[in-house]
Image (cartoon, rainbow, N blue to C red):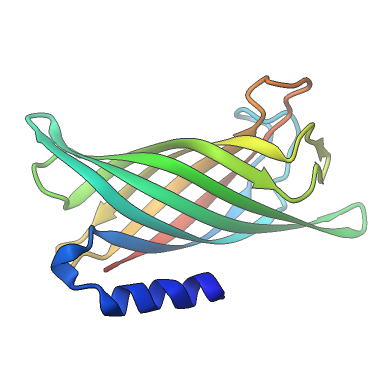
Length: 181
């Protein structure tokens, strides 16, 4: 809550032309089964999250517009597992590369991010992580309207990237709504 208040004070006191583009992203999603990278299913898990992102570089090229973003995220997952209510809190920090096929930031885009995550619990459903610290990876596709409103669909993966064994990891998918300012 304190972070949100500081963010609002910063926004209100900084002239718009002095700020880079920023987003607050609200996410809702579900855990995924073991069809992709993870070893066991958390398909019954529910997820809600909030992200803050700020752009820090932009490169208009003949292949479209490329943007670098810095993103911090918090996600809360919950799951009923064997009669027990389990919770998982995920904190992430990562650089994100976003690509628009047009010369402007509008229409469809693709996005990828790789960074670090801290997971509050090593045990979640049938998955037993070896470390609290993990790598965070996501891929997203989205659409930006002329008004600036953005919606995206994201696949997220967390694991230790084989820096420790075993490497079970877990995945979830989310629908995201971005508020730009």
